[in-house]
Length: 254
Image 1 (cartoon, rainbow, N blue to C red):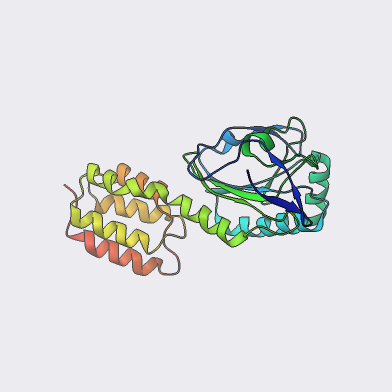
Image 2: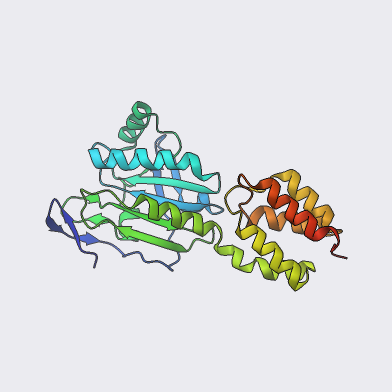
């Protein structure tokens, strides 16, 4: 049982408590256009789920604005879902008034489906408690925060960092994929080292194309692997590109 207080007084949280490592159960909530939205609609993305009691309170408004600002920096592989029991009309009104356009607002007002499945329903108030969940592309829960005091804000930085980390969990299988593609151990080690040092921005298409040529005959396989497994090349893109090309120029895969 999660210990939560609301303005210093203990409250009861009901439903199935969520923990890291669990498979995230699917749910269907209501969007601002009264459209049904499922968690599975975002199966190819890392999901940050921002949960709060009501958009018409100060802390909840701050939480939504903060995540909206963060969303613009995260790229298309991470989506932020903001969930409360507010009516979709209230969520839509707030977004219009505050210029909220980077997150997806969802309402659990109908059946308490999210609240029950994820253990976020406040029994005494009939609202959702405050917290954050991070779910990876494989639908595994990687991080959960139940904010201990409902009136306080969540740990934004921790949630964002966990979401970024979730982008790269599948990279643990990258070495195996590269080995299957025909790279030597030395090439695999060098590739992983370069990618690890530049995991921030999506690999530009022109670079994956050129790398495909370097890998000689493995163009489609290697390009696809790098596109889906790596978020690379920040301000040091030229330096990284040079290192890769120099290393593989004389060691093409035959």
